[in-house]
Length: 546
Image 1 (cartoon, rainbow, N blue to C red):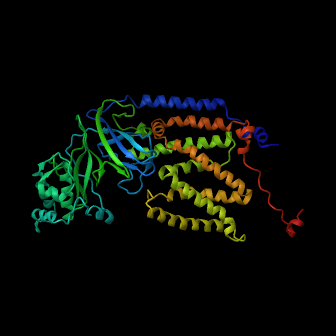
Image 2 (cartoon, rainbow, N blue to C red):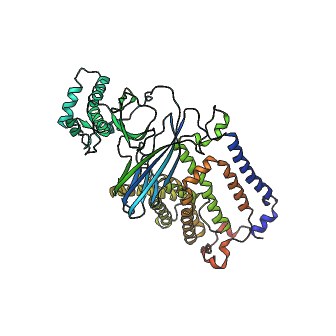
Image 3 (tube, rainbow, N blue to C red):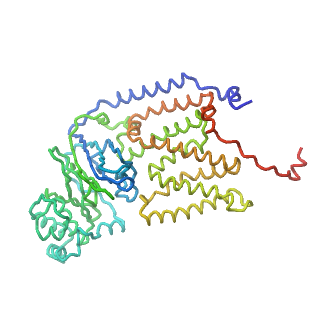
């Protein structure tokens, strides 16, 4: 009796009712309609505003070498990013993991040569506030952060005689620390405003006493750092209706475990208004291009009066738990990827159950695709083949007397050593893009190595390599789904859609027909015959066994 006949005769594996599957789909529709009805109309609370920010960059790119980094807005208690969208033909997007301050950045790599464009849009909810600007909350700096925010650069030139002489005139020895910052601020306010963008150089700015908004911010950072205050330039925008939108720059100085904000041009001391939208901290290029030429950047800021994703509750109630759009932008982006994972598993299930292709596990291809999203395809595949190669070579590298568990432990030790030196080699040739480039794939590959090694032992190297190849192919099929950010945001807005996913899984489980792999045209893709193990002489106990 074959497996399908056994399934049909087993009452515990009877087919799922089509009515139940239809009920799941109907429940998803009712839940979505209920969400739209209970969450109320799309409207802003009194005094709130909604803004659409567009950053459109054009650049001259070289395929595989040119990268673009865009710094998105930073959320505050009064500014919430409710949606982000990307238009990036000719680029592939990768998450940035190099620095805690930069990890939210959008990192794109060019796929084609020539003039390319990259556009990103943000919808920003500005909550109404009747209070005066407030100082930031207390925060502690680590030694490395303090060192970074006190370091010199070619633009600041803190050791230059002009900078040192200016600081001595503004910071006499007995002066109190807050007074030193106030003296620097008041001194730079006396500079003549300039709109001509010359070469950025703090000593030149101090000598000419003419400065743009950015020149004044850099000069204040240089003087504050030279006086021993950790400080940084903040690049951003002011949320107001203007014909032309240009970046604005101000300064944050760290004093008494607080960040104090100063806008020299507008005269704000210790705090800036809540319509100041920060895009980058400790830097002035909102759009950065590496190994390419930035041609032009346009900033467009418009006030919106309606938006389908924004629902404002009059009071906080229990139903707000079901509104995932109220969460911070970083959390929503991570949950959007999580919402896409069942779709990747659905692709794997279709390949295994309907097509008859064999891979290592149902979740492994989707998790490998997730690793490619958080790192990059090249690095993930590199880790994949290193780990798989050592698992295959483990049969012949060690004596047969070593059992499977100690042998796997030895292999993982070798993997850790080899990947450490591979990481160092990639860093030497400037090929590495992030700190977590190795860690995430190796964690996901842990269970894969055990399955690969067990398959080699039980079914032979041919079948093991066949399943490994299909695992890679199915992973590449899952990758576009896991990268589909717009779909992830839609599932985050209406998570009830996944009841339809559950119905599809049940419908797939109810399929008992012929698998596609058995069709004559594609039968050559089927898994090969199991390798026959050489017969061994029975032991003395086996000979006398009944």
